[in-house]
Length: 367
Image (cartoon, rainbow, N blue to C red; front, top):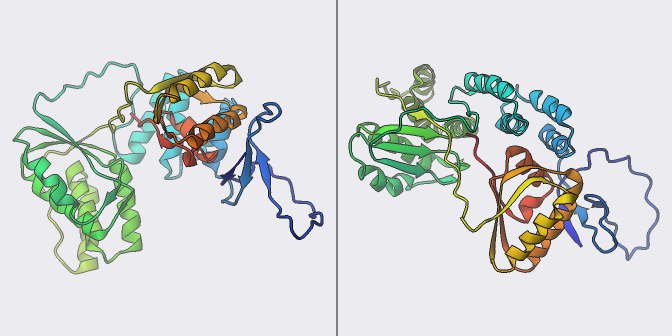
């Protein structure tokens, strides 16, 4: 059995001169994942291309191979970049290994670097006062296009004064100028409604808007939305610096700063895991085969196979081939598979090994 696999080997040897083959034969480069499982049970993966392995990939595989110190060192070396995945993975490494002091030190660095609320150590009581008014979550979709403001305007207008609107930007992956302008107009209108705001995923959408502004500097919608988000978050210095650039770029008067209560930045809500999902836990390795056998039994009576991976601490690198084989068997029988709640280290391993081609991955949120 073979599946496409889009990753280069970590230490792929230099290619030797190929032996002459008959013209009718087609050459393939195959890689076996995992330890040999006996005759008839190997998972053959066909390498069809892809880019060189990244430092994130290396760190995830070091962790999967139980090389904790090396994985930590690799992740620390990535903290100077803008890829928040490295931060998420290091937070989870400290959580799993019960290193609270290291976690708290990293949280402080995170807050200073990204200017937002850092994650908190799980298990600690939340002493923050809860809003007693009406609270309404509003999760923006992955794609923001024209008309998005009208779609959510009715939700916002249904909230009375003193209510809390929970805006989650975490899922936003793409947007165009019209969608950005709609969101900017919506935020400006909502700011005058005397609502309270909680915001999550702001760093995600801010970086996305900056990248779109570089690609399309003449598209005013991106500028307007970023200014509106800076206003919402109370980032006056960022707002005013950008307002000057806006005036120079468009030769127009920019929006004016308003002294209003800034939104509270909070962690994105965890996606709800169905109550009948099958739960895996601990280290997944050859010793976990009993769990996998029970998963296969569970799948027989479910067309949508949702696997709760929130209690999985690590997936052994040598066991991934076996796991891929089981998922392929489910996929081949017409099942839809979702792996949900896995920590950042496990989720990156799943992505590297091509499991995202077999199942929908819904990783745990950074909280």
